[in-house]
Length: 184
Image 1: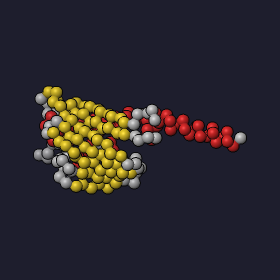
Image 2: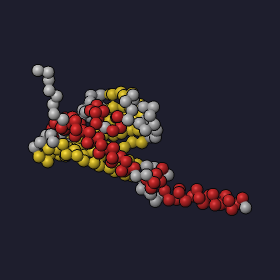
Image 3: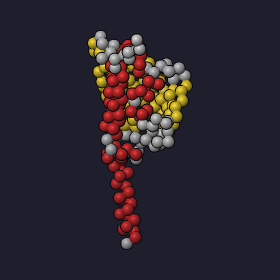
Image 4: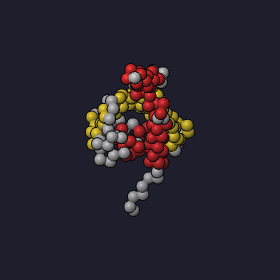
């Protein structure tokens, strides 16, 4: 009887592990927004990682997170690091890996807590009219075996896409806001 119970338990444990062998491990997300500003104005804003604090959903999750910086913001090699007691924020850093002026910025996100991962990300700008710019924000991730089973029960791509889209919508509001009027 105990052998039958152990056999059934073994099969029940094996089923998800075998299933995970056939589940994708990599995912990619890209969202876009059109901003009523010239491409150079938009690019000059997004090239600075420090400005992400103004529009990124993740930066707003913990107003008490500790931040540190290394290098010159807006240049290749600049690193913005964060540390939070909030498990939804955790700790990690983001580095500017490449810049193609007025077109593309490539980042590397290194997550340390609550899990370790390295993920590439990017932002692109494309002129669609003299005062109109399409901004794309993309992110790629990897869920190693057997954690990739989460991709079956949780739409990670949709969750990340929603956060990126909210960030881009926030960016649009910031960059399209009328300039503040000075006291006269």
